[in-house]
Image (cartoon, rainbow, N blue to C red; front, top):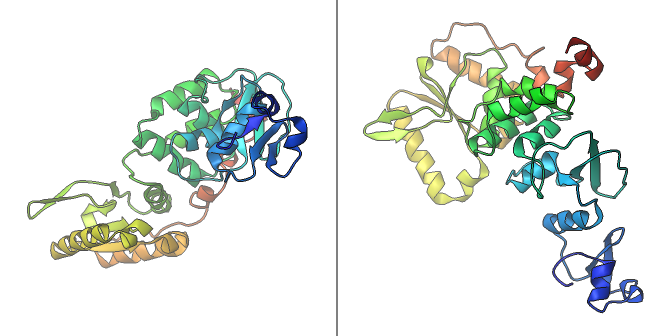
Amino acid sequence: MLSAPFTRAQARASGVSDRMLQGKRFVRVLPGVWAHRDLSLTWEHRVTAARLVLPEAARATGITRLQMLGLDAGPRLPLHFVVQGDHHLALPGVFLHRTRKLAPGDETGVCPAGAFLAFCARARVVDAIRVGDWLLAAGHTTREEIVALALAAPWRDGAHEAIWVCEHLDPRSRSLPESELRVVLGFSGLPTPEVNPTLALDGVTLSPDLLYREHALAVEYQGTQHQVDRSVYVADLDRLELLRAHGFGCLEVTKERLSHARTLVGRVHRELVARGYTGPPPYLDGRWQRLFSRISHQVGPRRDRARSA
């Protein structure tokens, strides 16, 4: 009663009357679900509360299921669940999707591949690539599993979108920002960099985030942990110093620089040119701009896909 949300039936079983629930000791979390006023509601508490009021057959899906797997990205609310059949239920902070047939899964939620399909239905290209890379790198699913599930039930929300985005996933990216950095540069038309390749310099093995080997240019994402953790910060300095000593250029990208993607692409292009690149300049219209729009805009309206199926 003090450590988690509870239903009216659970309250009665613990000796808490309906009248007591209306008092100041308890707060309503969802219709039919309460919590003690001193409980600091976490995201996990809200998931528990939703499960108490949703149909027993409802399963976590989309971004909510992915966050249960450990994804540290995306909005925490509303919570996304799915139920088989035409069940309508409106709850604050909870979105209950309906489907003709649930994706494989367990009592916790749909399988990771199924959750990714649901996420792709409404996701931007860049966000789906970030999340897809993370899923593959963490071993939660494979590209083959995602495509197989989508092809087995192409009517599922996000099936066509997931197939489209799978062509752009790379499990070698080690973080969400690294994935974003990779595609921001890759979709611009610049040469494709190697992702976390292995370099042996003076007996030391290095693995730059992105490497333009032909032009000896390394592009490194520097997250906040690189500045907060002194051991990481010092290791970064040593690594960059070694790269530069061997003639590599090192371009460091921060969260702020990544948020100005167009400017960042221009800067990488200038660095490449300074190191002998004579290819075409980046093209920041059309394909590149699609990174920041929904995948559904790339695959077309569902009715058109149905005609071509």
